[in-house]
Amino acid sequence: MGTELTIFTLLSIYFFGISRQDIRRREISNLAPVILILASPFISSTPVLERIVGLLGLLIPLAAVNFLTNGFGMGDVKLCAAFGWTLGAFTAYCSLAAALAAAVIAGKITHNTRLPLAPFICGAGMAAVLFMEAFPC
Image (cartoon, rainbow, N blue to C red; front, side):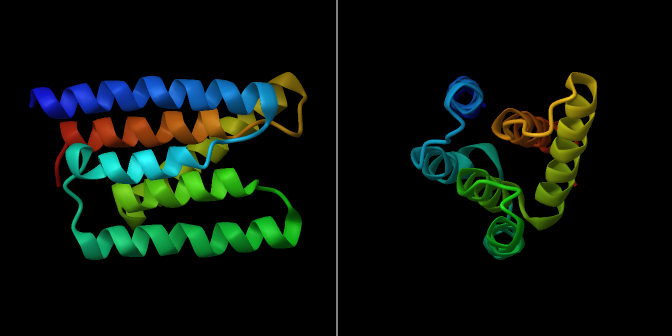
């Protein structure tokens, strides 16, 4: 229990920094998805097949959205795919829906159409990890 909590805390602090970087410079480090994938066995007990479906299920459609509309940056796509690996397909899609809903609401409030998505993706993904731990299925 102590190791998982320590890793979750360190990961949360790291994602706070990633979110700050995305707000300031509009870029996400390529290391962020790698760190999340490496930490995933410690914070999630999702089966490997579900992890693969989550990774590909988010990577392929979001990459297509990026190439067709330029609505997502590739950093956002890679970060979402890493959360897909960590959480599995269903939970990752739910957290992505929550992140996008929060981003749309924040955009309406601030009258800003180009918000950085990393803060919303990281917040929703880490909240999903907490919910998975609190309410195991």
